[in-house]
Amino acid sequence: MMAAFYGLLTGLGIIFLTVLLVKYFSTKLMAATILCAIAFIYVGFSLQGNTVSYIILVVLVAALFYFLALMGYTKSPALIGYGTLLHGVWDVFHHHGFIIKASIPDYWPLYCLVTDLVTGIYFVMYFTRRKKEDQLNNVFLK
Image (cartoon, rainbow, N blue to C red; front, side):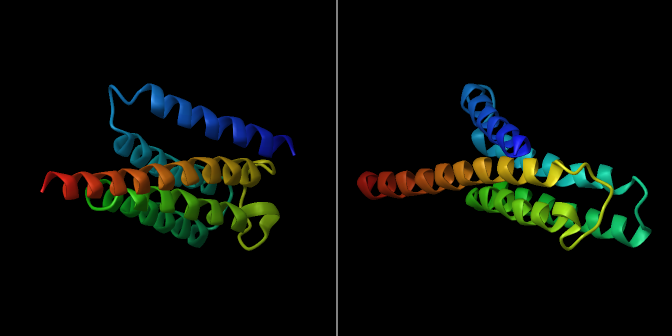
C-alpha cells in the first residue's frame, strides 16, 4: 500500500515540476521526455537475470512507447498522455508476475502504475483541453 502512496506523491510531484518548469520547457516536451524515460526503466530491470527473449520484448515495448512519445510530440500531444496510461497497463502485466515474470522489485509495478495513472490522466486532460482551446481560438479568429 505504501507503493501506491509513493506513486501518488511521485505523480503529483511530476505534475508540479511540469507546471513549475513550463516557462523553460513546453509541457509537450516534458511529457514526451517522461514517457520515454519510464519506458526505458524496464529495459534496465530486464538486464537483471532475464532471458534474451524477455530482454528483446522489453526493448521492443520501450521502442513502442518512444514512438508514441515522438508521434505525440510531432502530431497529437494527447498520444503522450494515452501512452503514459498504456504504460500503466504494462506495469500491471508485471505485478507479481501476473503475465510477465521479471526481475523487478515487488513494489515497483504498483508504484509505477499509480504514477502512470496520475500523470497520464493529467496529460490527457491537459492536451485535450489545449486542443479545444486552440479550436475555439481558431473559430473566433476567422
